[in-house]
Length: 141
Image 1 (cartoon, rainbow, N blue to C red):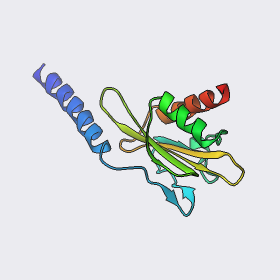
Image 2 (cartoon, rainbow, N blue to C red):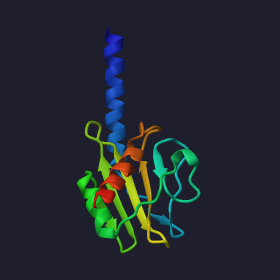
Image 3 (tube, helix red, strand yellow):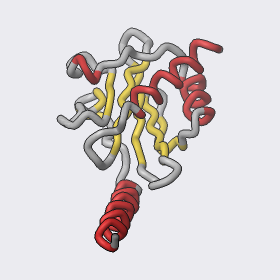
C-alpha cells in the first residue's frame, strides 16, 4: 500500500514540477518570417505549409483585433504583439502547464497559427481544440 501511495505522490509531484518548468520561457517567435516548425512529439498543431498532415490545421480569417478578442475570450494572455504577429499563453488549471499560441499574418491576409505545449509529449488534443475554439469565435463575429 505504501508503494502505491508513494508512486502516486511521485507522479503528481512530477507533473507539478513539469508545470513549473513550462512557466519559464516564451513563445519561439518567427523564424525567417514564418512560425517555427513543430517538434516530433504530438503536442502541437500549425497551419504553416510544411506542417505534417496529422498536425495540420487551416489558417484563420479575421483581423488582428478579432484575433486578440478571440484569444482573450478563450482564456489566453497576450504576451507579444506587432501589426502582423501575435503571441499568447494559455495555462492549464490543475498542473499549470503553459502552452504557446502564435499567429502571423500571411501574404493572402489570413492568419497562420501555431499552438504548442512547452513541455511534455502529448497534449491529448488540447492545442487542436484551442485553435478550433478560436476559429469558432472568429466565425461567429
